[in-house]
Image (cartoon, rainbow, N blue to C red; front, side, top):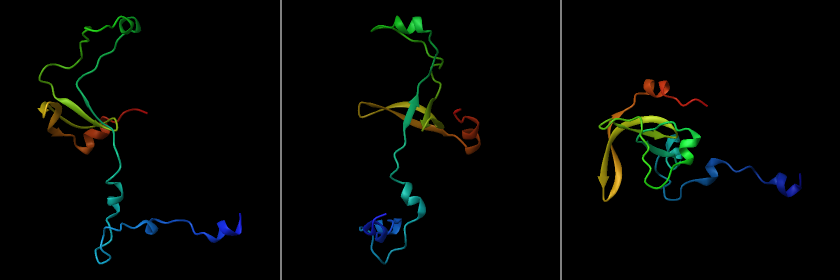
Length: 115
């Protein structure tokens, strides 16, 4: 290792403090570091299985029947993990989901995706 590199110290989290905070405020909560982490969010309307021959026959106008019944709540997944259920809504000409049930931690463990 070169003398210049050995003289440099390894950067630490304390080296990157938030300049918007006043020095007199309390230190940030450890979970504050996670607040800007991006998570993949998806809403599942339904699903089905198709044979490859049926997939190859798909065209504009094809209809695929899903396993979900009308009125059945949608599933909200965060990083492929079931987190809540809800109903579809329209917000400013875009689709959204109104949560009707937040899944308990016990139920989340039961619905863990297999890796």
